[in-house]
Image (spheres, rainbow, N blue to C red):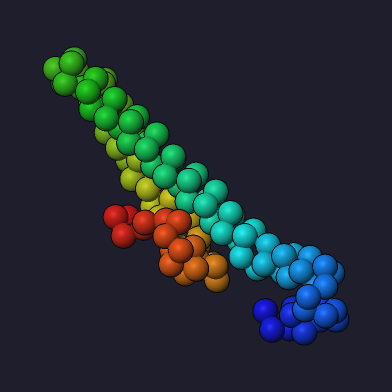
Length: 115
């Protein structure tokens, strides 16, 4: 960030300086935070949809009173849900490894303590 500000060769009160500061601010903070917001929202949505599918499969098992075909489908759905959860957890770890994740969390844009 210091390098970016040193490259601005203008008087601090000038319009050019203010525009460059806005560009640096956008490039270093706004864009990375928006990226993290998008990725976290996708992860949450996928987890929610997969949970709904699993609950629907379990509900179908109870309604059909353990029909073997439905039970097998539920077991397969649970296995796929476990695989998907593992993949989503890996994606979440990648997002958390991004340099801007700490700032995203510190600004209160995401409450990841429940995850």
